[in-house]
Length: 411
Image (cartoon, rainbow, N blue to C red):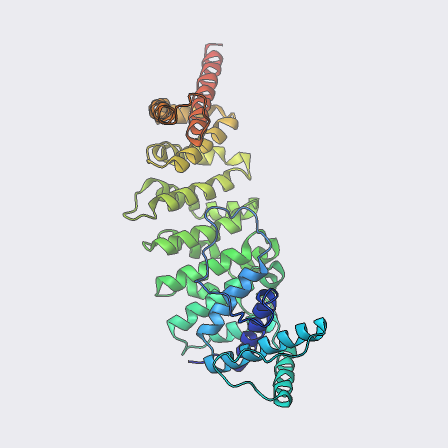
């Protein structure tokens, strides 16, 4: 199935840009297109700040999607002409005589016909659609009841790239792009549910205007996203956590809205209940990250976090044999203790926190000694020793606050 004509213009535009970016160091050479790979997933646990997207990376993602849905012969013709035009410009600027362009499997065209083809391609470039028009095109595809699941997935992947810039994300409501994406959160195929959540998370990341637009159109958006957190499909759950995190991070009101529907209980369950897959640690870590983002926006939430299973979940994560997860769980305990609410120590001691911390401390100390013996350097610093220091610090905070609590009790 070939893409719509307007999206074919995007292909030619992208091909031209790829040649411009990659052919500068190869005068008269074969050049060639950069190799394409699958669109990369968001950087692991680096979603705190919405970075300005790399234009080359975004272009490559869109080009990959466009190639999969385009007329390959038309794309090849456009690529040949784009390369010839670029080489012609380089030769004119350098004052060199025009040398014949590489054949790339075809006969070289006569000069007059070649110029006519270049002018035709240039005209097509000038009429290439804007990003707004591309979003409209993707929305039309998503609203097509005859669109296959595979094409729907590709359309969502293209939209995810298009809404990385905040301005494009802010246009989603006006362009009617929110409803078809949110509706797909309930799609039968897990890949579509995950892709739709990824679009929501990308558009919402550090973008209060889109967040308000989303809540206006779908006041029940958190209810829909909470269902994804219960999904047995690991990637659906993972992308659901990404979307929730993008909405609640640094947003007090949205955090309270998420919690009002039992959101903390969903996060605690993800931290407590093992998943029979390799994604278990990743999902636990992301659930903890979202929980701590919420905790940090409002000191008044401490009683809520202490009243449920959050202390138990933190202490259970200390037992998971993953150093990064153990460090983040220790950071969560440290944040609770820094709040200096007296019930914190009581809640932790009720869950035998000191015993868990001392057990981890002993294990980490043994691992550090083994590492130092292997390296032959007793003073070597490592990530392992850093986590050991953090564990000891949390134990010290507990002991200090337990002593202060005991003194107050005596008085």
